[in-house]
Image 1 (cartoon, helix red, strand yellow):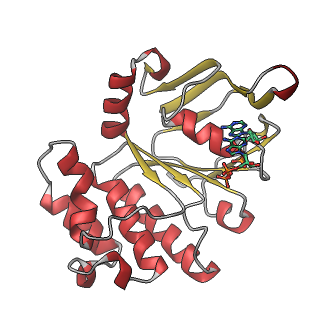
Image 2 (cartoon, helix red, strand yellow):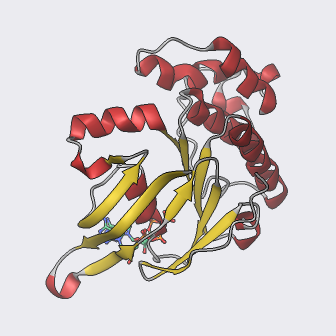
Length: 229
Ligand code: ADP
Ligand code: ADP
């Protein structure tokens, strides 16, 4: 079942001789529960695409449809609410709040949203990500891999249907990054969440169910799913 789709998605920056076609007619489809990697060289449009999919920025042309909502038909306020409810973001720099402990960081988006904390669910995520013994620690006292696991837990805390990850393990060594991504895979598949990850790292991309390749703002390979579900 389809959860997300783009229709002739275009994003241009600048104009006239400075015009950059960052996205030049992207058509992709992602199914619920799928783990898709979007791979391309630097400057191919990956970050721009991820920003469009998460409604962080508006397209020049075309559509992004998430769970039957044409997201660019929403006004800014509706789009913010949509993002908070449906999308979990994981970035390369973990963006943890240094004065809050691990647990407080993880539940922060739930509290900002004014929602009740599903303690059982949050504890389960903390457990799977191996953070039980670290809930009281401050981010500065954690390793990079641990901090990234906290960022993952925080992204999952609001039960988003879609997780958008931008080079999520870019600051970690290769053993740790595979472990961390493996944990993200386990948690998201347990809760039937969809992951869309952008990366230039082929080895990491191989952990996805499907690899979409982009070059110069165009899809050059839509990939074949080898999902087991
Ligand atoms: P990443 O793809 O690793 O997230 P960035 O998005 O920061 O990296 O940058 C990717 C490319 O986009 C770079 O070539 C950078 O120069 C360019 N770029 C990013 N932001 C801007 C901007 N505001 N103006 C012009 N070029 C930009
Ligand atoms: P990637 O993430 O694959 O490195 P980006 O999406 O960051 O690619 O960039 C795609 C193209 O758009 C690049 O040519 C980049 O320089 C340009 N670009 C990205 N962001 C901006 C921006 N804010 N202003 C102008 N050009 C940008």
